[in-house]
Length: 285
Ligand SMILES: NC(=O)C1=CN([C@@H]2O[C@H](COP(=O)(O)OP(=O)(O)OC[C@H]3O[C@@H](n4cnc5c(N)ncnc54)[C@H](O)[C@@H]3O)[C@@H](O)[C@H]2O)C=CC1
Image (cartoon, rainbow, N blue to C red; front, top):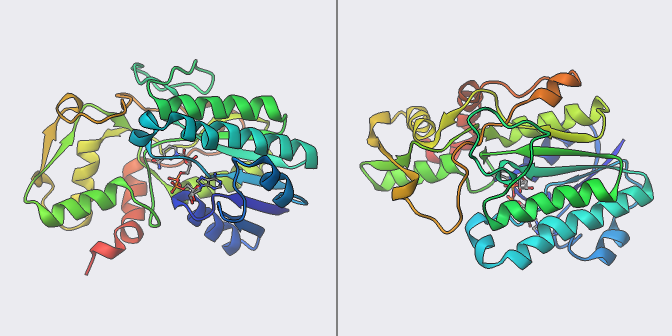
């Protein structure tokens, strides 16, 4: 099976390519300089003779998307449309990564894969449009919605907390946003398992199991750094205003994975404890 990973130099792409290569798969890893997904000619020229295309390319700057929605839309919606059309033409399966931000966060029980999307901000709107573009463009797709991603090869919450804790005696972190911290290496593993299992086309939720809030996650990060978790103080989203709205409840249910016999990713805290040495390597002596 021949794979192409588009957006391969990002946080998820780096771990995905590493995993596929380690497993002996035939992988072409490309980023924007080789294939710009916003340019249909570039997509048509570069993507050929592959069995699976994994789109991990995205405009991921959530706050910046509020000011630059047209640019975000090009990458997050028009790009996936080009990829879906191209995959259909060459008979490749498209795996496309989406986000919890397609939901507004007002639920109190886990979001179902089939639940109505209602994004609260520009990034979520563009990602929801990308999902529709994929579904409209090809019949052979796997959409994987993920959330609260962290990894060794990108800017992410654990590294930001580690940096802040080196400069400050206390940190204030919000308690009223709930979600599922998810390690890029675990998501790479899930993508591999979904493709190898040849699951039916559809939308799947690829997040860790269980749930937490940012404050408790920050405390777990301090523990991993051998620091006192009590330096993390509680605050609220209202006191910590940012340009883009954040969903207050981002817990995704894994019903579709279970339905097709694919194991969801394990509990977020167990996975964090496994991930921490790699993700926090630059902060450890
Ligand atoms: N980081 C997070 O917390 C979350 C991420 N996601 C989704 O997961 C996926 C992966 O995210 P990350 O690895 O964090 O992203 P990232 O920002 O680390 O990497 C994105 C990659 O896409 C590439 N790219 C951007 N525009 C492109 C274009 N026009 N053509 C080709 N490549 C282009 C960039 O060069 C970069 O290497 C994205 O679809 C994102 O929306 C979903 C939920 C949470």
